Image (cartoon, rainbow, N blue to C red; front, side, top):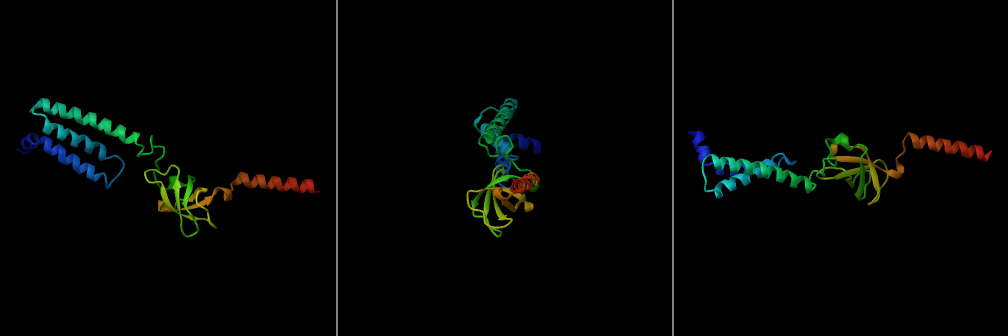
Amino acid sequence: MVVDLVFSNLPLVLTLVGAGLIMAEAFAPGAHFFVVGVALFVAGLVGFILPIGGPLSLFIMSLVVIGTAVATLYGYRRMDIWGGTGEGKTSDSASLRGQVARVTERVTPTEGEVKVSEGGFNPYYRARSVDGEIKEGEEVIVIDPGGGNVLTVEAFANVKDEIDRELERDQEVSERGSAE
């Protein structure tokens, strides 16, 4: 009884389920529900348009689901919503550590905003500097992702690693040697 009811109203069921999945995408972005939702929605609309019933209609709607899903996924990727090949997508807050960003709003120890080069769907993050002020437009590096909500950043000019310190020591030694 229920199966007969679903199959007799299959275009309506597909359209409603597709619309529901498209709306669910708003709560869980990432093309997980959107691609399938659009495919089912379009197949439901095609089912309404087709005057044919029975197995041929099911076969045509199945082809429409597959074709629309492939086209939607391709379009979704081409519009660079995911960051193209997925390279621009961050997987978690720890993956932000060491990322390069550009200051979009002056960063101080208490406020500011940066745009992470490969920051995923929304690359804009609130930021705090390690010390001092970093002007708008400067490149910075993420020192501490802080859970992904507020990043701690440092200007490239201030970042020193072990190699930089060793070079400074060598330069000081050579300057002392030439001064003697």
